[in-house]
Length: 445
Ligand SMILES: *Cc1c(COP(=O)(O)O)cnc(C)c1O
Image 1 (spheres, rainbow, N blue to C red):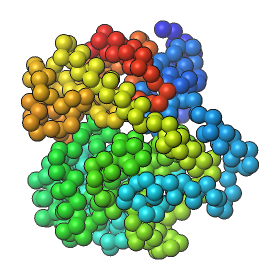
Image 2: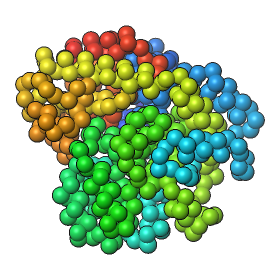
Image 3: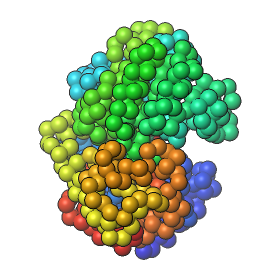
């Protein structure tokens, strides 16, 4: 595989952009390939190499790279009528109605421009609504590049995980390991009256893919209710992907107070949103006092892309297709691991998937969770499957990144560049693509 053009582009990029990229995760070693264009379920790089793409923009591309006719024409019409106005448009109302109609806990929506902005605003809203400062997040959980959640440490011994963030921010952020009910009880016993919200992804999607153990969400919901705290689901990844249009909260039958969205809801354009009960969402300005605003928020081109993408998904059995392919892929991966690396774990659900290079597990897959770890208690591998970010971190992350990822790339399969980020099947993928991917895994694992 020739990468001359990408190498030259990266050389130029390093002179004018820190690390040569605009988002850290893209700085694949020794240098990333530069994408020339997308093509359905594939991408083509600057040197003309074609890859089967499971990165899918790190989550936003439910349909793949080709916009269906109805999405494309809505986007082009919007753009040609002037990109944005600083006055409301009908399409914002339509997308808000669509979200409120399909997502069980959502009555009202505020659109913003990124997942980060959504979680920043949700945390501010929870603090403003409850009059409390502390938030609880999952260790290793990712909620975007925001001051309050970029923390490391355990319980109330937390510190900023990046320079540039005052210690004071971390003081208000408490961490617990995902899936650890005891830790959640402990943190509430100690700080319950000061906790504004628990902020968690329903499924950890940025640290392997970790499914909740049975009863975990319910425990968080109950603790929040008992202490007058809000439960905030960060569905930036899982929204309109896991559980289809009802999102992961519908699939798990949990009623969060607030939900953050991003990624898919903008149909591939920059987006975020905060949804929830009217009583809470109406605390945002100008209805209430919690300041929230944005020049580009509710951008008409983004709103049109999001609305038509979701309509297309609803009308064309997109979720059946992508979830079916996801299952085919995860089942195939389990077969491969059974032969070649029984200590590894297949994770994922719906159209999300990953192989975590765990170090210990029984040799046999007998009686295990089918098509990806679901944290089933009677699964013989239950004791060994990753339950939280710490477990994922202890896997063979170096092997994954330095040996496995490049090998897959050389075989023309584009995966997310490390052990942690989720991978996605899209509507443009076919059963044949999945078979090709499995052949590549067979070689590379
Ligand atoms: C991607 C992501 C974010 C941040 O969204 P951006 O659009 O990158 O700012 C927040 N939360 C979760 C769960 C995400 O996956």
